Image (cartoon, rainbow, N blue to C red):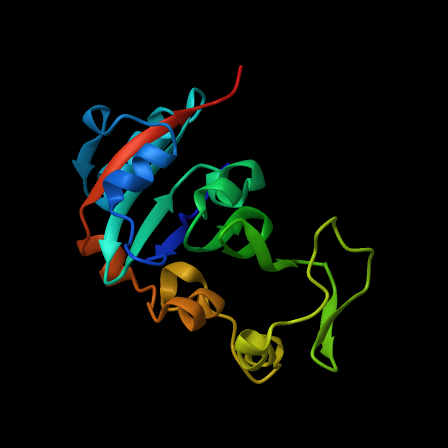
Length: 203
């Protein structure tokens, strides 16, 4: 099963100070001295090589944010991980699984979920009166109401006139871009150097 990289979470500074890649690593329970600096290609190879024993990630500072990239992992959508990681700051996570055409999006402020969104092939939804309307019952904690900050972006995503763009073809992470001001482009990802580590699977 092949997966395109997922991008997130990303952190913006909380009151008083921001997070560095080293602080992100520490919050994940990984020792900084056990990490290495790698390119995107090296991160992807490392992730594939260690897929069965750990969830690998890379972290890099982008403006006022720290961007975390996973090529094979679910850290960015595991609430037991991302809720405590957002302590004192904002966390925005977008997970994309190409083989199943699934998108998961989370917006969390200081441990509190502001918005969750799932877009899946065959998972029908539409926007009505500013709320996400679902064809099938929602998952637990699924956000039914769209925050004002994301309403226009959600309308754009849901518009039949707006062409769907695969993440590896250009800026497609519109919800994350709306909240962070960071446009996720291949150039940004390919030219960055990541602090790379791994979180072992629970036993």
